[in-house]
Each structure stands twice: as C-alpha cells, then as structure tokens.
Amino acid sequence: MSNDATATPAPERTPTAASAAVPIRSIGRSHAASIQAHLLALTPHDRYLRFGYAANDEQIARYVDKLNFGRDELFGIFNRKLELIAMAHLAYSIDPSCASCAEFGVSVSKSARGRGYGSRLFERAVMHARNEGVSQLFIHALSENTAMLRIARKAGASIEREGPEAEAHLRLPPADFDSRVTELIDEQLALTNYQLKAQAKNFWDALALLQEIRQGVRDSRDRMK
Image (cartoon, rainbow, N blue to C red; front, side):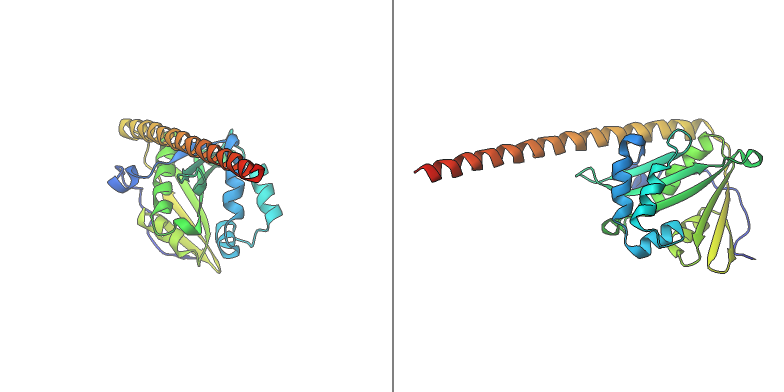
C-alpha cells in the first residue's frame, strides 16, 4: 500500500454560497422507490464505480431492500420533477471497536454531472457525521474513481492504494454550536424546498389532467357532429 497524503484533521467548514444553493435533505424509507430508480438509471460504468463491481438490477434491488434507514443516514438532491438526481449514503460502523466510524458513498445521475453535487453531498455528510459523534470517516473506492478521491483529498483525507482499490481516511473534528445550528438550518431549508417542488408538481400534474379531460370532451363532441 502506498500513502498518497498525510493524515490531517478535517478543517472546520463553513457552508459556501454554492453549497447553500443546493437543497440537500435527509431521505428515508418512504423514498426507497426513488433511491432504486436513481441507482437503476446509472450507466454500467457508474454502477461499477459506485459499488466497486458491475451491479446488475437484481443486486441494486437487494441493496435498496437491505438499507438500514434506522441506523444509517441518506441524503438526496431532487430536481423539479422530484426525481432523485444525486444521493449519498453515510453508513455507520457496526463493529464495536470502531463505534465512532462511518463510511461514505455517493452517486450522481449523468444528467446532473458537473454541478459539484458530489462535493456538496460530501460536505453535508461530514457535517452530520460530526454532529453524530463520528471521528473517522472512510471512503472505499476504485483507484480509477478520480472524482471521489479528489473530493476526499481536498478535504484532507489520507489515501491508501492497493492495486485497483483505494481507501480514504478522514479524521473529523468534534461537533460544535456552529455545525449543529448549520445542519438544522440546512435541513429545514431543504425540506421547505422539497415541499415547494411537490406543490408545483401537483399543480402542473392537475393542470395537465384537466387539459387532457378537456381535450377528450372536445374530441367526443367532434365525433358527434
């Protein structure tokens, strides 16, 4: 194994304007269908990078079915159609000897690339992990997953490579007043944004249905003439 960087504690992070502009909300069991749809829509190569192997549809379905929403934390970014376009999985360690450890995984839809969503999700997960008492964050990734390793390295993680795989270790500072308040505000803003998108979607769906009904009435009248 070769060490690419010296381990340094993660710096205190203040949300930037870019991160504040991206509503990231916690997602739970009620979003399981959206999670599965998002993962199934990934290209074969993206599935390979996300899971470390070429996951097929059945394997993805099993992954979603086994998600422990009561223990782990998942975060998502939704578009205006309420489609999940990026998500992160913060999995807490079940090993008693590493109770303050967690693992981070992320995926971004092809149509949403180049917007910094992976970095924003990482920052959101780091903040939550700190507030939950996590002191060590791990990222298992393929060595060719340069985007993920770049995010980890930028955060100050130490990266060890062994053949085609790499593992990043990031030491997290303890939670403070700022991290707790910031997470509460970010989550509330994200929930409000999601509710507004849901209201807008319901409006447009209802309008489309009304137009369809009206068109059906017109067509019926035309046939009767």
